[in-house]
Length: 621
Ligand SMILES: [Zn+2]
Image 1 (cartoon, rainbow, N blue to C red):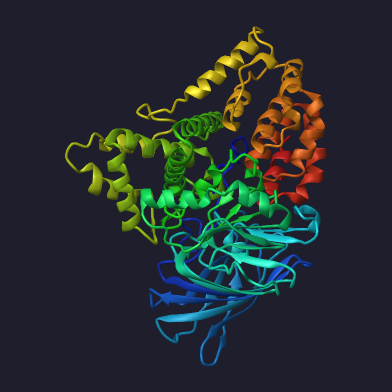
Image 2: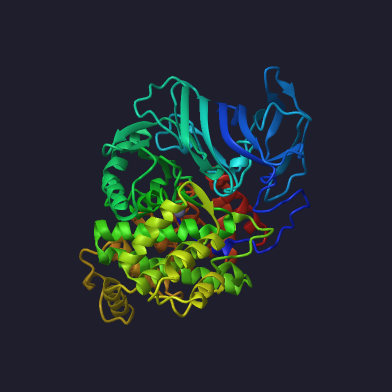
């Protein structure tokens, strides 16, 4: 996923996981006894009831012959029938266990004394709940085109279980196929082979021949058009958005080629992008073959395309070599953030890359300060303890930006050529496998650190993996372009230069963010009005610049921005962009009233997990 700044928000309360057979790694499933190798889905999207209905056939390999209870993960599913698919299909007894707030409900299936073979197929007929945490059902009014409804899934971290009963853990990889039925005027897209010329008829079939973890199962259904970008790349989006999206992301094919040069072949066939409605709570989701992307990345000037570089880079770090548990999320996100910056550097130059690195560092520092203040400093480790926590809590800037700093540290100590060689070998060695932090460290020791002349010690690695905060040995990024921004900001703050006399010609989005993110916390509304008169920030359409401006506006009680704030929060559901605006609002009594009024209008738009977090937050103010 692409970073989020949720931190102020993270629920610190520990929820105790009820005892169930082998609850480890955020799954109820007994993965030592059974391993799913394939899922075959047949699902109908009922937009009236906001439910997926149908069945899944799971091909399961038996690893422990004596075990007769198969346990799967579910959340808020209604299970109709479970049966063994054999010459004579046999119904199986099943029981849904007590619902846990984080993990959902275990589905215990009793298998017969004799199975058809070491590998068998279980069919589960089921339907999802309208509140499925991994599905977002949108009315036509909540889409860009306003004519047709939209459905999209978000399975990471543990939401696949809310739309498919399965072993919902990245330890298990499986292939899948799917038959999806939709209203005839809509098109379905999945993290699988997509026919870019598919006729809209409501009947779509997909094959995913590469084994993937469950969190990469993905489905999008809407009024979608397709526009090619390059021979292997293109964009799916609503017709009103598709041209702008294809223009904005026209560099995708070159990003793909760049990444292949650096880190080896792209192994997934096509790389397409699906533009989601603005309610999508993440920047992007690296669903294989088709990245799901927030429309807030379409700035009109390619200034926010690093999100695509990030999702594309996951085709190596994450989708090819996968974190084996959510405590090891930095293996996906830190590696990918490093790769993302290398793509940005190759395509847009070292200045742009340095700016992204510095903005990332500042965001990391804010998250570390928040966690530390809340007594949750262990969440600033690359290897946090997530027992009893929702793994979504770990998607702060820590795995992303601290993970990126770690890889940058290796680069500084080893040299780029050696690091690249190591990474290529790592991606090859563990391709289509899941690895945890200890696996990675062992591989690093064996293949790199044990070589003569390597200036990285075991203690260095331990500090990175186990330590809190940013290690002393980190190599911190620096940007000359930002230094010039700081000079301009200070000149204005000191009263020496009027806003319209500041040297801002040619500033990029990143430079404006540096300017706005670092205004003093106690800046006055009158001073913001000066900036607004010169630069029209309240009217800014760039989603990131607007976000930074509105945060300042709330702090300073700059009421001229209130209508824009309401409009922003009721049209965008990306957590990184809305969550901290609510956090800022509820710091004052008037702000709480305003926040509640806005939230009442905005809530139906927000994805279920975000709405749940905000519900919790409002209970405590
Ligand atoms: Zn990511």
